[in-house]
Every structure is written in structure tokens, then in C-alpha cells.
Length: 86
Image (cartoon, rainbow, N blue to C red; front, side, top):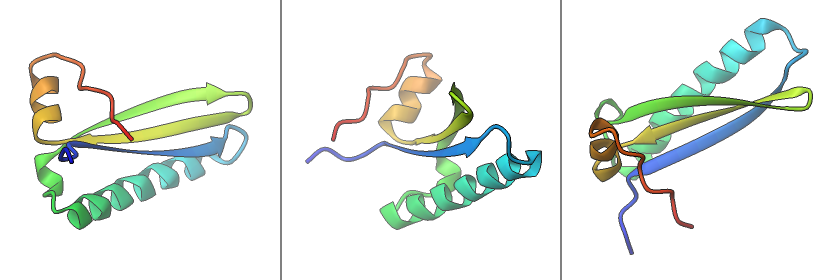
């Protein structure tokens, strides 16, 4: 089994909710991503993080991604990391 070198998490937030909700959601996602990396045995400070926001109807979808190891090296070289496999 191949070793994972990236993790992604997404949350859907209504665009009509107070502005503080999106900020709180992002901070929560950062916290949970750090906890997940520790659970996987990855030092959170060794990863590169990326945010992506897409809009779908009345919702904003926040995706927080962490890359380490081989995926981090690909990003640093200006390449797109390989898509995760299930």
C-alpha cells in the first residue's frame, strides 16, 4: 500500500450566514487538519497548506489541503501533486 502524502477536508457554509462563521469554520478546519496529521504521524509544521474556495448555489465550499513528503516536493518544484487515490 502506498504511503499517503496529502490530506484534504471540505466544509460547506451558507453565503448568507454572518461573516464570522466562515472565519470560525476556517480556524476549526486548520485545527482539525493539524490533529489529523498528528494522528497520521506527520509533523504539522512539515506540511504545506492550501485553501480553495468554490461557490455552489447559496453555499461556499472551503477545501483545506495539506501536502507533505513527495507531494510537498512536487509543489515546491512548481508541479501539480498527483491526485489522491481511494
